[in-house]
Length: 230
Image 1: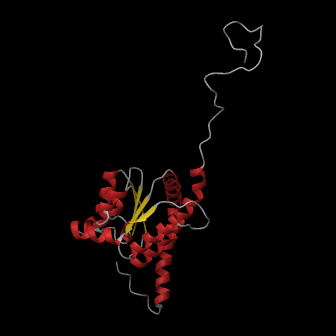
Image 2: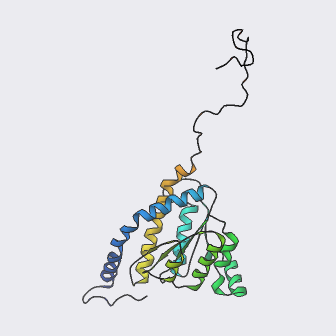
Image 3: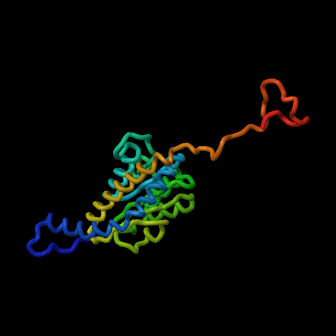
């Protein structure tokens, strides 16, 4: 991805901010989806599931930023949530790349760590990275829910995942910057939904035992064969 040539007379900063603003406004359309993802993820994490995240290069940094917010906190103190940036385990990453090839670096970890109903979020500016596509295939085989943050769609990864958020910009820097915005918003929705997800289920009505024990003198007027209580 290469940005367009700066407009005549524009500074580097002015040009960058113009491209950022152009892509920022359409991001408002992702509000409801991010809210829904946050609620779904909160329920999954509260139930003992985990979020696996992966990316390459700058997107790897974005992925690690996101997992740090979940394992740590975004705003308020709360229980830690299970989130793993797959590129951050460097010994496993290099061993897998050495033994199985770089295309398997994330897929093998998905098979190792992922459980049915966990979530996999893949981050990319291009949507064409083979190791991310292979990871998405592994997630489908393992039963994980797959999401993607990508650059402009359609792209192969967006098509492969259950849902995706696509940033409509030809500039990879802008795409990554708005992926960070989306990550923060997603984490905020997780924290908003978490108390309800953690709340214990309350029974619909009083629970009655199968046998009632009556203490005291029996009622002589009660019919034979029935208890003396209502």
